[in-house]
Image (cartoon, rainbow, N blue to C red):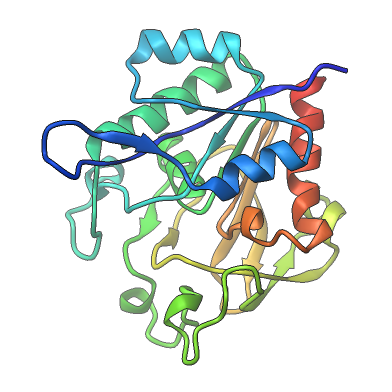
Length: 236
C-alpha cells in the first residue's frame, strides 16, 4: 500500500528581519515517518494554495507553536504572548481546506487550539490566571523540570470516543502549554480531560486533536499508535 503524504503546518523565524525561515520540529517528521507516512512541510498559503495542497495531500497535521490572537475568538489580548498572523491564517486556511474535502486532520498542542478557534470555539488565554489552583501545564517549568518524553499528569478519557478506544479510562500525558480550550466548537466531542478539569482532546468525523505532544513520547506505544491510526485513515 502506498504511503500517504501528510502535510505539516509551518512555523517560522526571521533572524535578520528580511527573510523568514520556515521549519517544524524534527519530532513531527519522525513521528510521521516511523509510523508509515511521508511528511511534507508547507509554507504560508493563501486560500487557492491551501485548496490545491488539500487536493494533493492525504492528511494534515496542525502542529504546535505560539499563542493565537484572541481577536479571532472575540477577546482582547490579556495574556497571549507571541502571535504570528500569517501562520495563524495559514493554519486556518489549510484546516478548512482539508475539512472541505473530508480528509483526515490531526491537531497537536497549539493545533487543537487552532482547530477549535477555526470552528468557532474559544480559549483560556492563561491557565493560571483563569484558575490559580490549576496544575502547571508546562512541565519544563516544574520543579524539577520533567523531560519532554515523560508524562507529567493523568488524563481521563471519555467512553465512546476514538481516544478512549486507544487509551482506556486514564493515561499519562506530557504537557507544554499555558492556554487551553474554554468553549469547544460546535460539532466536536470532548474526548479527554486533565485531572484538574481542562479539556485535553476533541474529535469529530475526520478530525482528532490533542493538547499534549504524542510525537515526543517516542517510547510509548499508545502515543505512537495515534499516528499509526492517523496514517491508516489517510490511506483509506
